[in-house]
Image (cartoon, rainbow, N blue to C red; front, side):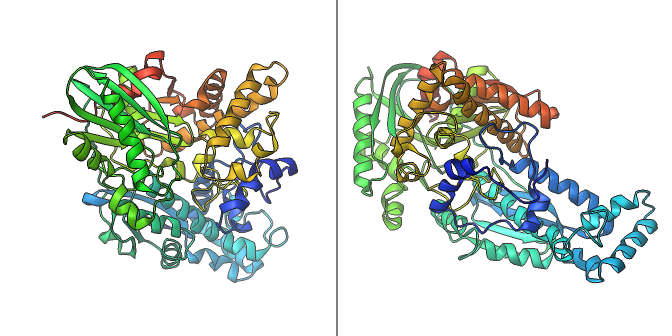
Length: 568
């Protein structure tokens, strides 16, 4: 079945999606015209999310409609490039319906039909009905469709999808400059959307926080677009000597003491990420690190670490959402250099290397299975993910995949970190489970209901408690049949996410871990993810799914993080 006009199941609308959307989402609603081109149903539905519309399938549907219409000469190409520091560039293109897509319909339905048929004969098309359907969206352009809808829906879909494809690249790779080349009208609209006051103003204002330079959008000639360029990052793989490692999560600070690859001590320190005082964060991290370093039998030689958010190649906390309430001017002065300051001021300037937490997951997973081409997904407070190439190097991208467009359901959930609907963070992390808990039959107190303020704020405390109730429901034979649908739904999400990430990455292995995957739930999720690949992406059915060994659960990521700094 295909969406024509979205209709939400009332209970789901109240309990799962709408409550999240009304809190923070400022995205304009997708037009009815664009819906006809983009909305679709997955072959493997999410049991508790009947209106889930995977981005990757919407793009596939769009590309097919473009292919059907290209014979009419109404399709052009939009090229875009996102530039990063050091000359690195992400580059892609999207076929788009140009303004000339309206030409056939401005003649009137009957004259337009005659021209379409004439063009079909001139091109030697044997299937004239197919040509008519591609142009008008129907075999009967004179009676079954509104001419206004028909003449605009292709272009509306192009503008919407192009904006989301660019957003996907920005959050996957990072960027300080967007360059557009293609039809004038769509370039004009996208430039406005990615400028102050536009739909993607959040991206336009966040990227300067990451890179420290103003964001810019330029419309250029095709020959002025830079070529695609990446510079993979090579990190250390051996945790020799006495080292400490840390992981900054949104709930706690994890620290470990490692000597020659063996973990001697580990501990977790709770902290309040919402505290606006950078000195508070500095003190909590330093106290935890010093207590752990004291367990080492010899002098400290290096520090490795990971954190949520964007971390520069020089271990600067350019945009880490562990410090959401620190004032921007203070953040730049005190938080950006926090890791290097700690190493210099508290530990005698020993080498330090900090990377994104998702990348550490991928590095540890690669070491666990003994091969690369691995995408690691940590389903914790949010989605943390990263990729390791076949040779063990890292992408050098920001890997903030939690902010990627993932679900094009026009009434998909919003979240407290982004103004957009359908971000991956609401499908591949703790909040994916908790927003489905009610419809999953879990007995919840009022303050854990999806529409309660506690479940729609930055704090993860209530979500962690809610997850425990979900896990308890999985152990109760009377509630397990319905509760397992939570994990089945997340497994469906995961399958479509992996397919989406395969667009730019050669993924042969996937590692899943994190608190949402504990117990039977992790196995259920992998089973349904595999079903998705077999049903909708048979060319990806060879991908292997892995879960952490007991060794990795206990120390694998810690050892991988500790090994990051290379000793000279």
